[in-house]
Amino acid sequence: MGVSDRSGLLVRDHFLPAHLRDALFARVTACEAEFVWGNTRGGPSAQRHALVLDSARLGELESAFLGLLCAEIEAQAEVFDIDASTLQSIQLIVTASSSGCYYRPHLDERDAGAEGARKISAVWFLHRHPPAFRGGELRVYSPEIDGATPAAWTEDDITVVEALDNRLVLFHSATLHEVSEVTMEPGQGFEGCRFSLVAWAR
Image (tube, rainbow, N blue to C red; front, side, top):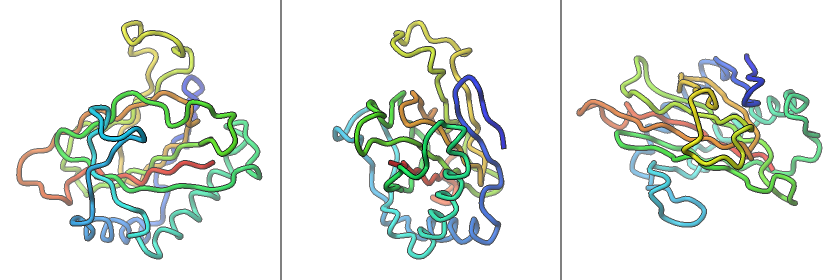
């Protein structure tokens, strides 16, 4: 586990036990026909291009994953300077990214102090071995760029987190971040996608 002081994010590798990780991969890939193209909260947009799945389709695996994730968030609450007892709910979705998928720089929450606002964002990566895609990194921007124009951003302002299988990333929901474009060779199939379970604790 590591914490980046600059971007305030926490990374934990090998987050899930192998049997749960394998069960989730099997369930997610079996739901291929149920994925739909996702929208941002404002509706369809060039901001985001990825397939999404209602986490309820994970069945009993959803509660197993959320139980471990909630315990991790509670254990790391001090790192993010939050009172875990004030968190009221957690929302979860599943994403699948094939060639051409991305998510441009965005905030998960613009007003973290508001009632019911998203406080902590979580991303858990899942893919087959060896990975069939390139790209798809999570790029987290330093809080120091707040208010700066994109033209002023440099690579020194960004922490790049590789989308490694069974890696969990936690960060403040009011932190600017993006997902770089994914590329895949033809013929890899749905199982070759970059999958993730994305959650927001409120």
